[in-house]
Length: 435
Ligand code: HEM
Image (cartoon, rainbow, N blue to C red; front, side, top):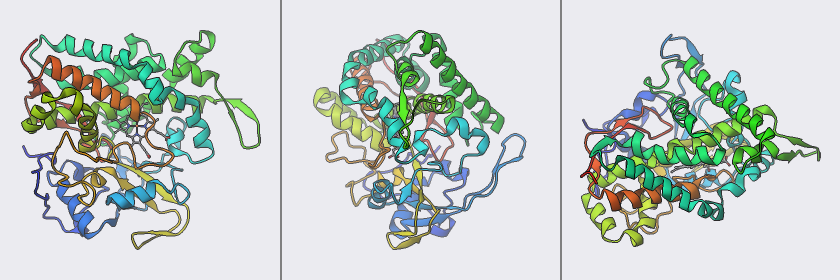
């Protein structure tokens, strides 16, 4: 089976579709094998293009969940994505960074800081920033390495397994859950719930909107009750920090986080800290399987190549495909007039394949330098809070894998998530010489 991951280095991917027939708003688009070709065409012929935003029907009942939206501008070139991301006064994160506006019934648990602008965003982000600085992440570096070692140790005798569940998902799940103070016994449930939240659009995970609502509510409530426990029994974890934090409003009044602020913060951290890094690691193994020369280069100098290889894995995978902004006033991008209130969507996957910035962009090159990819966002106030953490996790896991199981490879085609938001891999059988 050919997937959109099958690209040939040195050759620009193609599509038979004309620009007018490329519909980025439709879920079916995202599993098409010519996906890279579509973006190559858009970058070349229509770098800023307008797309319909179809209604969203409940996959099980067929009942309309979201009405047809006003449509959105797709920004596909690197320079334009940078410009939108770094001008938060013109391109706002409120009311939502997802293409569809948040329905009121889920706004309570989805209304986290990622959908906010200054000054509230800065205040909320400031509460947890310290937990994610390079210094703090270095402090838990040994813990991350120990976890990575334990995960590889556990699968080593098997000779084969599902790479996504047993390896790629295991590390980010364990680390973010530990940071938040979630007991080990609950980690599997957290894994299932985050799958549902970011699996919107894939019928395997979200067969109806009720599933999504139930998963969101459960995580939200879980965060609230964990926070309640921390009030009585404070620990050295982020949930305790959030529970004890006070924010200062513009009028100078101070207050503890409201249940809605607290629950949605918890939900954001647990979801963002899980799926993205897992996706990067899974694509990393696929890329090494398809590019044995790059594996040889990496194995030949593990210490020297790892830093550039980690960045290349994030560029290659681009786990988060897009985020949206909303124009605060009339403006233009690359000569296209953008009106107040228009939705503007930055396609990071496309920016990361822009040959104006990345020579031979369809080549997976573990020594690529420079590599100023936009996998963690393109700069600005919302730049990925967990970028340092994700880098350390990817590094620890591949260090361990390449040392202990140097011939580990994908044993079959990946089962890809149907999503225009997360470039996810649901399952990836792998094999290796047992150790
Ligand atoms: C390879 C892994 C990851 C990728 C590719 C990734 C990607 C992104 C992207 C593209 C953004 C939006 C940036 C922007 O709008 O400018 C973002 C934001 C965010 N990420 Fe990550 N992320 C990853 C790992 C993590 C981890 C491990 C955490 C840990 C909790 C995390 C937490 C967040 C949070 C909280 C935000 C919102 C920040 C804000 O609104 O100020 N991410 N991430």
